[in-house]
Amino acid sequence: MRHIKELVPLLKKGNIVAFCGAGLSSESSIPTFRGKGGLWEKYNPEVFATLGGLLSLFIFSPKKVRDFIVEFYDILLSGKPNYAHYGLAELERKNLLLGVITQNIDDFHSQAGSTEVAELHGNAYKFWCLKCKIVVKKNREEFEKFIENLKSKQSRKEIIREILNFMGKCPGCRKRMRPYIIFFGQSLPQDELKKGYSYLDKAQTLLCIGTSGVVYPAAYLPYYSRRRGAKIININPESTPLDDIADWVIRETAVNFFKIILPILNETFFRHRRIRFRRKV
Ligand code: APR
Image 1 (cartoon, rainbow, N blue to C red):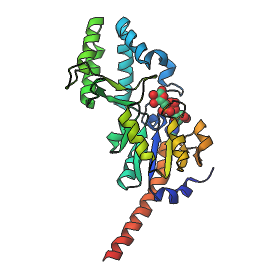
Image 2: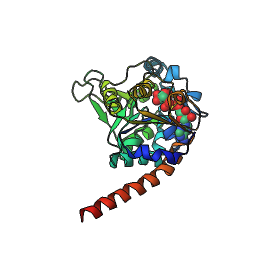
Image 3: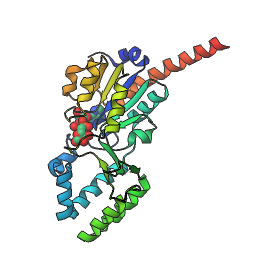
Image 4: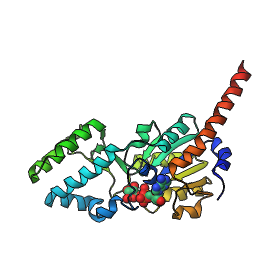
């Protein structure tokens, strides 16, 4: 393991892509899925993270679905982007970062100002029509109101009606919209995957941040990037399978990593601009 500062020359070359997982948002008070206290400790992912499991629960025990939705969105809505999300957005503004490929559905990259984002597992604020592939995004306030209303619904009929009304209908074909969340066993959204590969095809450096790297097909992407010759930097306080292909293993949290790296990059960035400015005058 080398010192983080030694990475600066590589990062300054640009053409960076970030591949992110739940660990990035753990410092935004969103627990990881597989860590201690993670969602999958309390809710069986075979039921709550599969479309079939969730649909049959919705029909036979809507109260359990209501409790899950309420707990999930209470956590999500109380969090906000952290220093690392803002750090990635800043790297994009400096033209050092080509894009973020994220497995997270919390929308924090967009909220932090990133514009080049491939959302492999969807987005918890979006709904889509499975037929037309039209995607509609609702805002935080709309979700807050929905969750407050849902909490007060007790009967099976009320719960189902509240959820279906909120999801709404496709503006194209009027079919019922579905949550834009990719469940286990579903294929990844092709447009997002294509976008992700287009970033990787230009990447010289891949920052893997806060992912266990065990959920496929998303977990193939770092291997693809490695084969194309990118340097792999794995930022994770714990060991993961991605350590095996990493050129650099950084045993730090995502926020600590950016707190070390950003001030140095800012310093060199502004020095470079000052020199260019002086040359011009
Ligand atoms: N900074 C960096 N990494 C962290 C931090 C932190 N502050 N805290 C935890 N981690 C690391 C953990 O060590 C772990 O390796 O983040 C990783 C989180 O792993 P998972 O919970 O498995 O999350 P992820 O890799 O995103 O899972 C992929 O699985 O359940 C599905 O669809 C869900 O998108 C998710 C996918």
